[in-house]
Length: 182
Image 1 (cartoon, rainbow, N blue to C red):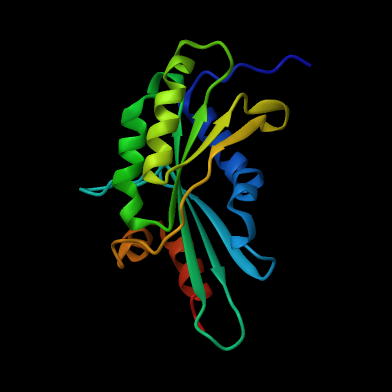
Image 2 (image 1 turned 60 degrees about the vertical axis):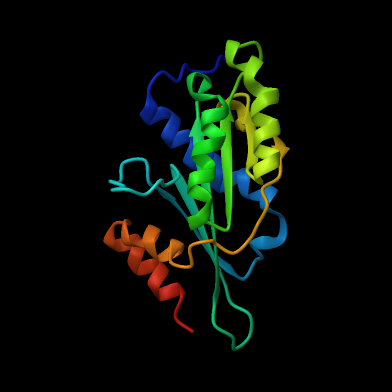
C-alpha cells in the first residue's frame, strides 16, 4: 500500500491529534492511569491574544479517593520540516509556564534537509526540559521515536490551566469543569 500524500495543514492537524491520542501519551508513562478522564483538544484555530499556546493540549483529570481531582496539562506543538529549528524549542519554552509538560512533535522523514537541525534542536530541548518526539510518517501506524522525555512540573503560572480552558469552546470547557468536581 502506497501512503497517500499529506499536502495541507488540515491533514497534518487531523493526523497529529490522532497521533497524540493514540501514541504520544504512551511516552508520558504512568501519569495517565486507568482511572483518569482524558481529552485532547486542538487549539490550532483558537485566537490566542497575547498568550503562546501549543497546537494541542491534553488534559488528564485523576481522582484518588476523597481528595480533590488532580489535573495534568501537557502541550504538544507540531512542526513540519520547514518549521524545525531552534525557534521551535524557544516557542515551546514560552508555552511551558502554562503547562505541566511541553512536547514538540517533529514530522521529520529520513533524508529531508531539516534533519540537519535535529541535533541542535535535541540539545536545546534537553536543556529546557522540552519533550521531543520524532514522527517519520503519519500513516502506517505513525512510526515515531521519543528523542527526549519532557520534564514534568507544576505550571509556573498557577492560572495556566484556567487561561487555556478560557479559550476552549463551550462543550470542551463544560467537560473539563464537570471532571474537576470533587
